[in-house]
Length: 388
Length: 244
Image (cartoon, rainbow over all chains, first blue to last red):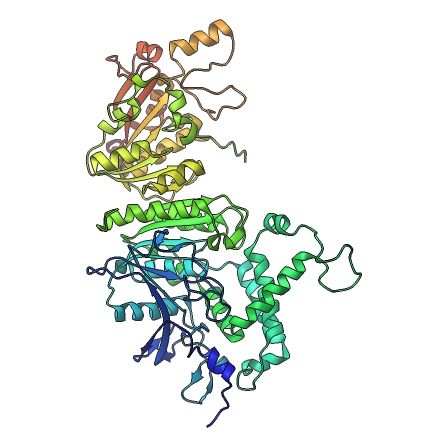
């Protein structure tokens, strides 16, 4: 069967993008029961692995993040999403630590996802791609670490869905995780969050160009639906005070309202911009699959309905971080995690950081976040024998 | 529910430099003397939870000098951030609310220093302390201290002292007690007092019987080592077993 692969699609498949690729030949048994494989993991590394292989830090990216933590994004050219955190002399110090970040399974930046060609049909997987879960993402990452010869990670960290992966790592591979830092995360996706995700998915699927998910084969792209999904989601990453501080009711390049439906307000113009730039770098079907993985995440359910069970006997050191204005993953969810870790007498620190930057605070310049993480990692490094 | 947030650590424990203005009240390592006394009571290598750990002065001392497996809980965010920033394992939490999850005997020692009087349910808290710790070390200001009595008697105003620095309308200290009150409560709830020390104004121990009226008059604070009266509980259970 032949299929026309446009240059755009070739680019989407990430053949020209910088970074490492690992082809995993042995299939991965997914939670849905399907064996996926062979599959590709695209990843970036920063710094050097020490001879003991004891200084590796795995960074897990969020829903729309990618492996370009501290490199310019190959499509947008924008700086890496955690460039303020990862680099020489920074909190995740590349002079001391070996930093790894892999694009998640189901993603669209080089790791196998629904936009890739299904070898059995010769066409993009689209909706025939199996539904993946956060545990699946972590299993795939474990394969990568096995390949890199890293038995034990010094630290696993990440925000939002990245934090979910951190928790999954700590629960699934406790002996491979010396320290775990889930930021702005939770042990399960709340009903409200599932609801927001469903709005986003419906927006994508309502776009006629989505074409039942087969848009790549048909040479179309559901950019309007994906942009609306991004706009709705973006609101949930901010906070009312932050939106008000940034935009208030200010008008966009005009002195008075136009009595129409143009973007009169700055906040509208901002959201439209967020939506339109997002579609350049993200795949609509990937968005469906990854949001679904987050919806399915429930660490307690995985462990007989008891969250403490997920961490029974853990020797990892935890640092849980939440933000006061985060209404997507609010502090009580982090506190619930802390209580579960207390119940198994785990070594846990918990910091709530006062900010009006909302859920997105983990991506922004938050001095207290940096200080907390630096102090925690310094303490852990001493215990790990990595020196000060 | 009234959320009178008691300002523990920040204002009462190690952050309480202002409550201890005199250099004489510190140990050679710079630790507040009452904390130094508590530190002496803790065996090396113990699992310790310091509730209301403030900026982590005691915890840092214990980790450094006694190699303890130390954890802390602190209400004030600035205190917690300072602790975690210094590599200590501390959670932001409220003694009244966030201790329930710990299993019985999770710690060798649970420390509650100058915090009891700022909690909403001190009695329930004490029961929790001896449940989650094999031993609990509790220190608190003695409201029966003669200067406090005199303050109230002569001035007719709510006492303000160097340990109790707040005016009545802004104090986080909502459950003040005397040493006698404390001992009576321990008796009532069947908590065993293993050891007790009373301290003078400068944090030096008195050689007085901590249960006598003189200590209740002369001591500015008390430090009590408590444990769950397991023997008694078992005896009661056995007696109940025989009856049934």
